[in-house]
Image 1: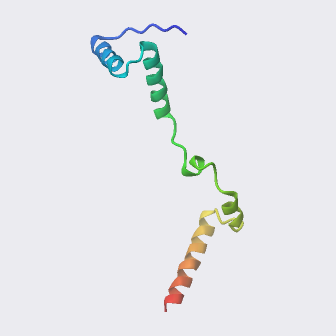
Image 2: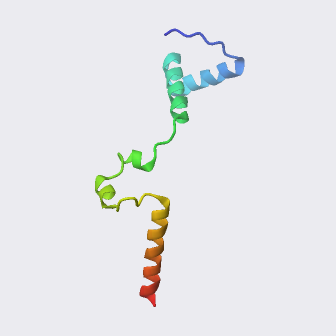
Image 3: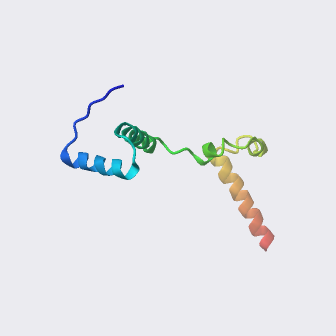
Length: 88
């Protein structure tokens, strides 16, 4: 798709420097810069998304309802109380 852009002197100077440094033609460089800008604006994937999702074996070992906050607090409290009792 053809595109015409008017650049001010400072922006044109920046473009010329980038072209000289990279050795790319104008179209390739501008496409690359647009893609990079677009990618930076995308939300970062979560850790689970980066590793391909939650491991099924991990999810299958959790007791039903354990993902809920109150259930987690209760289980954590039980674990901490048991550890304190073991130390005595």
